[in-house]
Length: 256
View 1: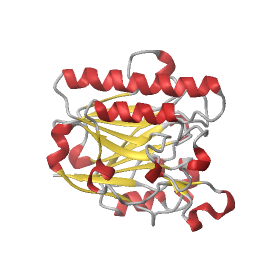
View 2 (view 1 turned 90 degrees about the horizontal axis):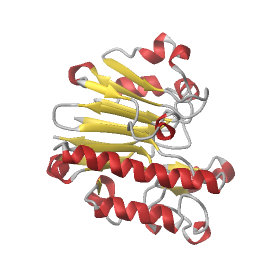
View 3 (view 1 turned 90 degrees about the vertical axis):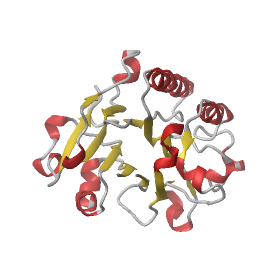
View 4 (view 1 turned 135 degrees about the horizontal axis):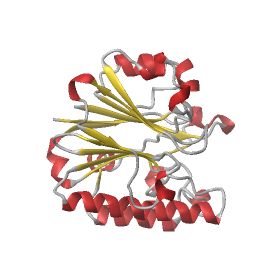
């Protein structure tokens, strides 16, 4: 099963840049999108219905903001879906979470908050991180294997961004945010790309300013984390730098 995760920074803009054709022809069985910025009543037939796929959508209370979606091949549709952790409404009402149940695993598509606006949003981001861990641990206690993909909005280590020293005091590379990533891995969750590519320098987001993408001055913000029971099923993992259409690029994993 092949899976991709892609922050599209507005699905209507990405559609004009070939997103739907890419989903249709890329060979992925599950394509998870973040920052769709759309409500279901705004979906066109072309966005909702790609031949061979069923689409699932989560929207927030605020229009034109946040939002996540999955396109799942009809041959492997989930048994059920949920649109939040069910812990506190403040974590669910921004439309950041889409949970899909499959026979062999639970797939969690998350658009994690950005903490750069102010201290209040940074604290919300940290609280959201802790809620994610609480939810994931509760599902593991039920015996579920997990795949947690999406835009985590944090570069974990110095290898994961082009200019670490210059960004030590920037949300997205603050020590307190990186400490949570450390904690997440301490609980056993595995960053699939870094596990199989310990020394590879590759990024998944670039600022639109100053030609950052052309200069490859980027950050690795997008991840596929898995629980240990799935590790021996991973065939490959990748960051697809050649795919345009957003300030992010897709990341991918293939499982047996």
